[in-house]
Image (cartoon, rainbow, N blue to C red; front, side):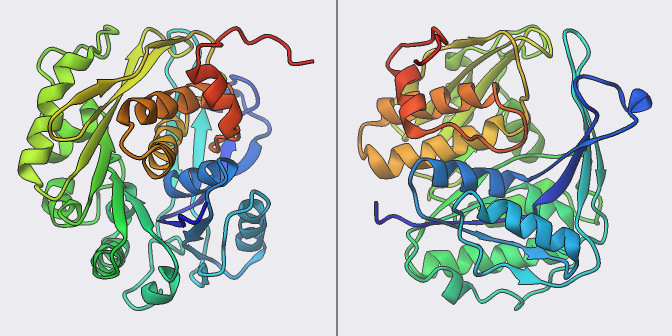
Length: 345
């Protein structure tokens, strides 16, 4: 496969109490690394797509540990810059049954939060690449990352890359002086492909799926067609819009599906019952990676693309940590209808 994907954003140290303990119970934490864009890069690497991950890491042992963690999955790291005082951290309390998960961020003044224009040579980072992916998390962190992200999307378009974005609205992060509604429209205008969910479209652009009831578990594809149509109408450069459809029956049991809209036709994937969630963090990133893989592999077969994206991200819910480590073959097996979970001998 000669398609190369570049992803840009912050990767953090993730600390979570073992099992399903509360923060107040914890006497130790499980340690992994993760972040929206790195999650996409790792997943794509597992599908056999050449990937390059771009970020800024501190020049200390934690920064080096994070770098080595990413490298082990076959992701390119040659354009990661080193500097800044610290690695961002997030704490995750895993929800179960009717108790939802909780996230506490500790990422102020992180290496990526203090990045400045000109620190990354985007022309070199994009050399030989065909695709650039970013998320709405990056410009939410601080003014510096927002400026660097704008540099990146402009250069990517100048160099002819396809640009994708996961809108990824995070209310806890937009604290630096501007809102998502002020910053995101300028960035999204450079995008060819965008994904999101009901909260992203509503909180960032004021576009709501009127008939959806997420907390009641009602997320029907038809209710989101209007959202996709309005996004395409607002951003004429968007060629594809995908929306994940998560019905939250409880923290342990979700329904999972997705739609893909190409400006004319709405494609819907099968609905999966994810009835025993191991780790839902990174599910949307796994969907994004599956979507990118499908678009560059299956061409105009958009039904197959959305089916693959949903199958791959469904399987992510069975894997601990941010990264989706399933193979292309495993996703295709589920996509073909084998949801038995039988032992492979």
